[in-house]
Image 1: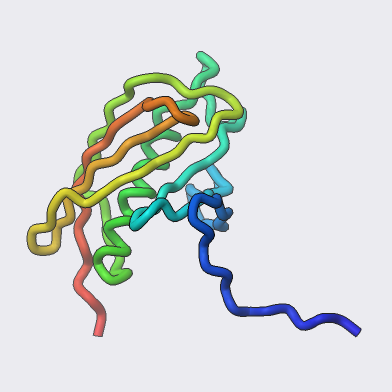
Image 2: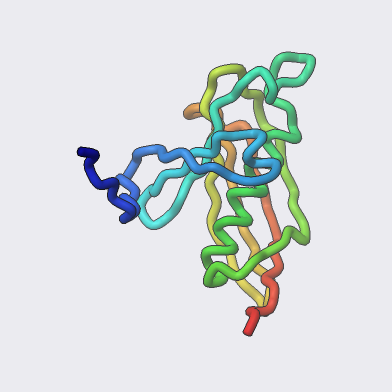
Amino acid sequence: MTAAVSTIPTPPVEGAWRPHDQPGLMGTLGPLLARREGDQWAYAIRVRNEHLNLAEVVHGGTLTALIDHALGTIAWNSAGKVPCVTVQLNVNFLGSSRLGQLLIARGKISHEAGSLTFLDGTLHADDTLVGTAQAIMKRFAKRR
Protein backbone atom coordinates (compact mmCIF):
# COMPACT_ATOMS: atom_id res chain seq x y z
CA MET A 1 0.00 0.00 0.00
CA THR A 2 1.38 3.44 -0.92
CA ALA A 3 0.96 6.50 1.25
CA ALA A 4 -1.02 9.40 -0.14
CA VAL A 5 1.10 12.36 -1.23
CA SER A 6 -0.07 15.75 -0.01
CA THR A 7 -0.78 18.26 -2.76
CA ILE A 8 -1.02 21.16 -0.31
CA PRO A 9 2.05 23.37 -0.83
CA THR A 10 4.31 23.76 2.17
CA PRO A 11 4.64 27.41 3.22
CA PRO A 12 8.18 28.77 2.99
CA VAL A 13 10.26 28.50 6.15
CA GLU A 14 11.85 31.81 7.15
CA GLY A 15 15.49 31.77 6.02
CA ALA A 16 15.30 28.40 4.23
CA TRP A 17 16.18 28.32 0.52
CA ARG A 18 13.63 26.53 -1.69
CA PRO A 19 14.44 25.48 -5.27
CA HIS A 20 12.08 26.57 -8.06
CA ASP A 21 11.97 25.13 -11.56
CA GLN A 22 11.81 28.00 -14.03
CA PRO A 23 11.23 28.00 -17.77
CA GLY A 24 13.52 29.79 -20.19
CA LEU A 25 16.76 31.50 -19.25
CA MET A 26 16.34 31.20 -15.48
CA GLY A 27 15.82 27.46 -15.90
CA THR A 28 19.14 27.33 -17.74
CA LEU A 29 20.96 29.42 -15.12
CA GLY A 30 19.31 27.71 -12.15
CA PRO A 31 18.09 25.93 -10.26
CA LEU A 32 16.71 29.18 -8.89
CA LEU A 33 16.50 29.35 -5.12
CA ALA A 34 14.12 31.61 -3.19
CA ARG A 35 13.57 32.39 0.46
CA ARG A 36 11.46 34.66 2.58
CA GLU A 37 13.39 37.33 4.51
CA GLY A 38 10.94 39.17 6.74
CA ASP A 39 8.38 40.76 4.42
CA GLN A 40 10.68 40.44 1.39
CA TRP A 41 12.08 37.68 -0.85
CA ALA A 42 15.63 36.87 -1.92
CA TYR A 43 16.55 34.91 -5.05
CA ALA A 44 19.79 33.01 -5.62
CA ILE A 45 21.78 30.61 -7.76
CA ARG A 46 24.83 28.55 -6.82
CA VAL A 47 27.71 29.56 -9.13
CA ARG A 48 28.70 26.78 -11.56
CA ASN A 49 31.32 26.62 -14.32
CA GLU A 50 28.69 27.64 -16.89
CA HIS A 51 28.30 31.03 -15.13
CA LEU A 52 31.99 31.96 -15.44
CA ASN A 53 33.78 34.08 -18.02
CA LEU A 54 37.34 33.54 -19.28
CA ALA A 55 38.72 35.30 -16.18
CA GLU A 56 37.02 32.58 -14.09
CA VAL A 57 34.65 35.00 -12.36
CA VAL A 58 30.88 35.19 -12.83
CA HIS A 59 29.93 36.67 -16.20
CA GLY A 60 28.19 40.04 -16.02
CA GLY A 61 25.30 38.60 -18.03
CA THR A 62 24.64 36.05 -15.28
CA LEU A 63 24.54 38.80 -12.65
CA THR A 64 22.28 40.91 -14.84
CA ALA A 65 19.87 38.06 -15.56
CA LEU A 66 19.55 37.18 -11.87
CA ILE A 67 18.87 40.74 -10.69
CA ASP A 68 16.47 41.35 -13.59
CA HIS A 69 14.53 38.23 -12.61
CA ALA A 70 14.48 39.18 -8.92
CA LEU A 71 13.33 42.77 -9.51
CA GLY A 72 10.80 41.65 -12.12
CA THR A 73 9.34 39.11 -9.71
CA ILE A 74 9.06 41.74 -6.97
CA ALA A 75 7.25 44.09 -9.39
CA TRP A 76 5.00 41.25 -10.59
CA ASN A 77 4.02 40.38 -7.03
CA SER A 78 3.35 44.03 -6.18
CA ALA A 79 1.18 44.36 -9.30
CA GLY A 80 -1.12 41.54 -8.15
CA LYS A 81 0.72 38.99 -10.31
CA VAL A 82 0.12 40.97 -13.48
CA PRO A 83 2.99 40.50 -15.97
CA CYS A 84 5.69 43.19 -15.96
CA VAL A 85 8.47 43.93 -18.42
CA THR A 86 11.80 45.64 -17.90
CA VAL A 87 11.84 49.16 -19.32
CA GLN A 88 15.27 50.07 -17.94
CA LEU A 89 17.89 48.19 -15.94
CA ASN A 90 21.14 49.67 -14.67
CA VAL A 91 23.60 47.26 -13.07
CA ASN A 92 26.72 48.42 -11.23
CA PHE A 93 29.42 45.75 -10.90
CA LEU A 94 31.29 46.32 -7.63
CA GLY A 95 33.13 43.05 -7.13
CA SER A 96 33.52 39.54 -8.45
CA SER A 97 32.00 36.22 -7.53
CA ARG A 98 33.51 32.81 -8.04
CA LEU A 99 32.75 29.16 -8.52
CA GLY A 100 30.73 27.63 -5.68
CA GLN A 101 29.53 30.89 -4.15
CA LEU A 102 25.85 31.57 -3.56
CA LEU A 103 24.86 34.54 -5.73
CA ILE A 104 21.95 36.33 -4.02
CA ALA A 105 19.68 39.03 -5.48
CA ARG A 106 17.44 41.20 -3.31
CA GLY A 107 15.32 44.20 -4.14
CA LYS A 108 12.69 46.62 -3.02
CA ILE A 109 10.27 49.03 -4.60
CA SER A 110 11.30 52.66 -4.26
CA HIS A 111 8.08 54.06 -5.75
CA GLU A 112 5.33 53.55 -8.30
CA ALA A 113 3.88 55.94 -10.87
CA GLY A 114 1.02 54.90 -13.13
CA SER A 115 1.96 51.60 -14.75
CA LEU A 116 5.66 51.95 -13.78
CA THR A 117 7.40 50.43 -10.78
CA PHE A 118 10.84 51.74 -9.74
CA LEU A 119 13.09 49.32 -7.85
CA ASP A 120 16.51 49.14 -6.23
CA GLY A 121 18.44 45.90 -5.90
CA THR A 122 21.61 44.34 -4.57
CA LEU A 123 23.71 41.34 -5.56
CA HIS A 124 25.79 39.46 -3.00
CA ALA A 125 28.26 36.61 -3.46
CA ASP A 126 27.77 34.83 -0.15
CA ASP A 127 27.99 37.85 2.22
CA THR A 128 29.99 40.18 -0.06
CA LEU A 129 28.25 42.95 -2.01
CA VAL A 130 29.20 42.52 -5.70
CA GLY A 131 26.58 44.66 -7.43
CA THR A 132 23.72 47.11 -7.21
CA ALA A 133 20.90 47.76 -9.64
CA GLN A 134 18.12 50.18 -10.40
CA ALA A 135 15.18 49.13 -12.55
CA ILE A 136 11.97 50.43 -14.04
CA MET A 137 9.31 47.79 -14.69
CA LYS A 138 6.08 48.36 -16.62
CA ARG A 139 2.88 46.55 -15.69
CA PHE A 140 0.67 45.24 -18.45
CA ALA A 141 -3.02 46.10 -18.26
CA LYS A 142 -5.03 43.48 -16.37
CA ARG A 143 -6.85 41.08 -18.66
CA ARG A 144 -10.60 40.85 -18.30
